[in-house]
Length: 333
Image: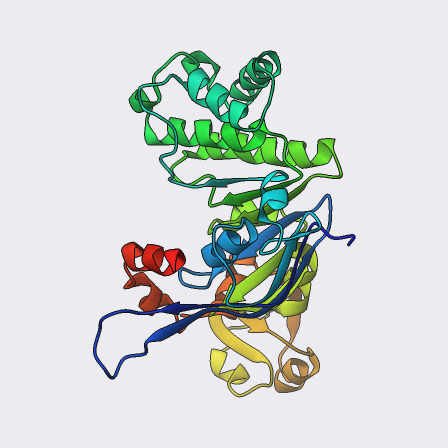
């Protein structure tokens, strides 16, 4: 299987306990998710709260069983060969509080390395190198309980890379980091992939600049379904464009009311700006009696495309009201 991550018709249903009799008793968190991520790819998974991103990550990292369908990571079925999958992956989640507070940064990372059988000398060398890269070298002997949220997250990020996994899952990795630290982490992530084309990384993020800067391809997940899977550059170009037309004289936005594939029209000084999702010909016909002196087009930002695809999301509010304790009980079953 020449893919690093693959899913076929993957689904996951959560049972909802309590609530009114008239309210749904099940939540479809994932439905018929089909995904392929190639070796050497930095793949982004985008979606709002409740879209199913974390559920998908949990299934791929063997923390949660699928309700239907199949998933493979590093060539192994996550349900049939979970141990073989675990030997080849690692995962970092934003805001997690892993580690022991009484241990120092080095001790925490060294202990984790031992779980994976990394020799002490090699582990200590990796710890020094990685802490230097993320700007945490001066805190190597500090107790993790004394670290700020941002510094603790840096330690967790180092933990994820310590084992040099074949497939790495980063779930909101820069959550809690300041702008400078986030930039350092993004640079490190990109260089880690570029150094070895056999490595694969799946990233979930809410930060569009992060996805735009890092990802080779992205999938947009909404209400448990994959709505689009594209290269970032292709996703930008195939969606829509912003167009600004400048005229010799003032014009009214009403000129473009009802014109095919035109929306979000705004008036500027002797100009109209609008979103165009189709051909330009209907616009020209509507404005044929006006002298256009300049035409400018802009690609949409990834955030604008993201908003176009997911909207509000029918599952979002329902998921937000599900307690984590209920989910934990469901996983245990």
